[in-house]
Image (cartoon, rainbow, N blue to C red; front, top):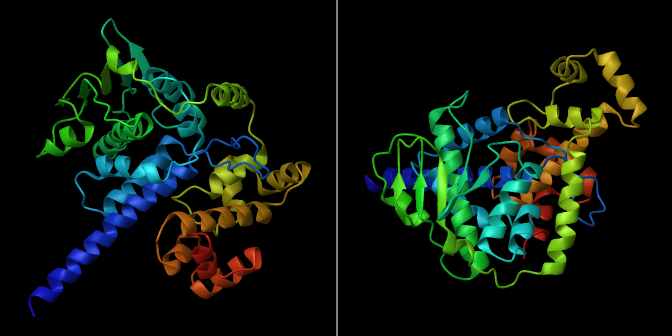
Length: 342
């Protein structure tokens, strides 16, 4: 009889860890800065997740899971979420590891506003470094986000090159956790903590490793597209995009009204209505679009129960969510989830 609670507790812990990884995976699919994929026929996802928002999502995942190596594990798991992701496609068609890392750093801003990395070339090595993360960030969140990035890079390079790719060394600016064996196992290199920098270092010889299935013609097209999108980032945001950024904020309720959103944007609700009208959209249409996109993403990218998805989207009852989703798509959430999987 004593074993039953332990088994249930273990199962609950596993579920929480799985949901934590799914939250992070869904976040990495959602973190776009308003760019559309090449050839897309639908409107781009315009949710620009800023550092504060990213910290909140990671804090939620850490609260849900007591996995001390959540960042490392999330990085390994991200491979399944990034298939078809623009930045992954760009790096996959680079000729060598070095070129792939250059493109990853150069165009990272297209996919995320958080911790844009740089590639520093040295006489015998090159290192991906991230900026000082100590300002305004929780130490645990900061640690797991960077460990996730480095773990994902190492894992994805293995997949792209069809062989193990070994970094030269890894440097973290935070203190070592109780056990560091997992770090060296996942990152496949000596790991140094309490360093003056946070960096993933490669030997120059490793940078010359070819990526076997790179397509030079496709890469040229992707680079032209990426440059165009980088230029577009400098243009002022539309009011629709600004509203979407607020209503899709993971720390806020999707039931918020136009008064709440206008206060977040620093203007009156009347002025916001007028500006949205000048762009040919209405506030409730934007909220509905965001809910639809988030609902579809949760249903296809995670196994989070539908009742919990309803709550995440601001519905107090699953039946209300079921009715709304069927109105949008013609399918119930359960039918949509089933039809989207092989």
